[in-house]
Image 1: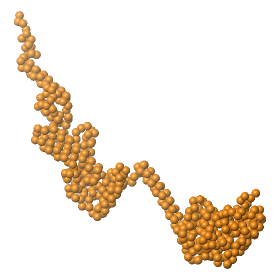
Image 2: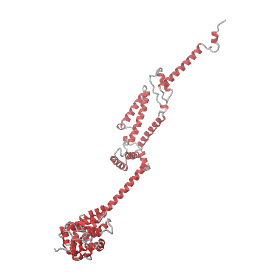
Image 3: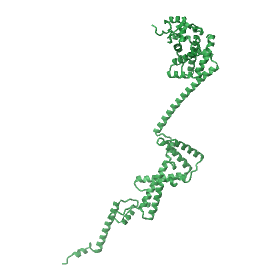
Image 4: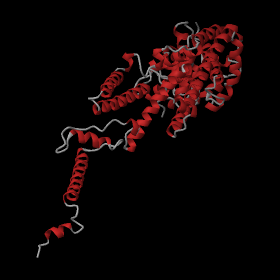
Length: 324
Length: 153
């Protein structure tokens, strides 16, 4: 091949060697017209080359759009997260969502419901135990002891017993297809959540499950409401500092045989004189002492009147009068 | 452009097109342009590699053909970058050509020697105040732009 020379550049159309070598950058740019060369390059392309170029450009444009879309989604996601976080902090939860959280019904799977049933059973057991202790020597006391034991058993193992607190297990609730599907979705989500991290959502889901069970079984709701009312009564009574049992049904005050100087019979009698009140040993002893003093005074009074009925009407003075 | 040159450039142009657009060279180059925010070096490097390959693999040493191929590829790449929204009009076309030619000459001593041996080039070099192109594999500076030659007083 013959060695080409720079003078060969002059054959490139209107680009002359002298122009190229001797020009400044700006002059050369004017000679080497980018647009003209692009047109020339375009004319050299066949359809296959066009498709190669177009495919490469399209691929890059799609990738760029994808990146832009991803950035936009990320941006919107961050904004949404920030908004949700703000609403949560401000307590602006949706009312319906709040209601669902509050709607804790008697679902065996519900921790709240279990706790409520357990608390109620324990409270009932405690009351029954008190009654049994108060009348342990009576037939009623024996029955109360039995009830207390039953209540304790129920409280300790409410699920094993298959009774109490678990209405829907006694009689399986019939769910429709929609409710089954809803439960399935909730259970699936529940399984994926992590206790401790997702407690709030777990509570919401359990509330939603409870609502489904309650909608399918009104009796379960009634049972739950009853338990809840009972617990509220107990709590209110505790706060008020009085017993939760009406005076009519109040068990006899717990007594002890060991109150110094007071016979057991008197202790029981005094206690029964104050239904609805819990008397301390000291109070009972004081009352017994007061009664004793009163009785002694009464006896003394009676004795005096019996021995000398004229004591205050001149008889004593008369008897003391020394005959002159 | 001379039809004879065009006939020689066209198959080389098509071969280069395949490497650029089918084998992913364009994508890599566009990434570099985006990352660096500059089109001169990435385009110069890509085109100089293609010219190198054309010289060494295809045995083409015709400076007219090589120059025409380089210019056409640069113009085409700039058009593509503009289409994908990376560059806009007003790119330093002359800088890219100058940079590309320097890279080509630095890696192709044979081409540099051809230029050096050409009396017409020597004459042109003296016109711009330069010396004879050194017979090394170092690219003669300013051959195309008319700038000072490396080592010039």
